[in-house]
Length: 187
Ligand code: ITT
Image (tube, rainbow, N blue to C red; front, side, top):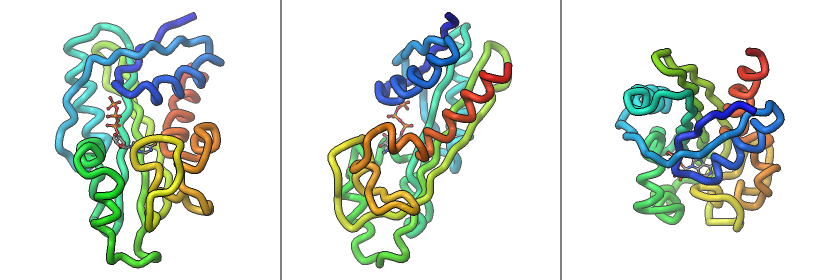
């Protein structure tokens, strides 16, 4: 069995990847060593910077993942700042910012980018997204982060009302992870 390090502080992300990679006989090992997340417009830029920084520190292949919620009515905010904004104002703070925004104008997109890095090589990026709407209130007890206020397209429930398996079938991270897995299947 091969080993692949997943550099993340998020246990949920690591577990999800662990399950998917096990069918390829690749063991995912979580490493919470942290890396700077720069201010940029896209997750791709954030991921590239993270890889550059980590390649100077570690000498083995690894993956990282960056995600964010981009809300149309807020010009894409919190986007690449999602983690910090969640820590500061949470779902309630986002709902407050959207207080006077009517139902049809509450569109948002969850985005995810996985980066795979081998020492000395340019990282490979795999992106996924999931479109949806921001609910009027916090609903559901599953998941994490902005799950209780995000209703994916063609569904009537928030991510927080779904099991992890159901969410990952079409979530932003489910899609980017699928692309990453397919890359490993083909090499
Ligand atoms: P890392 O150590 O891997 O960076 P993290 O939890 O800080 O772990 P990100 O920076 O990628 O993860 O995520 C940004 C924030 O976006 C995260 O803290 C959540 O609040 C939110 N988020 C990302 N994916 C989400 C999802 O599937 N459901 C709900 N919120 C999500």
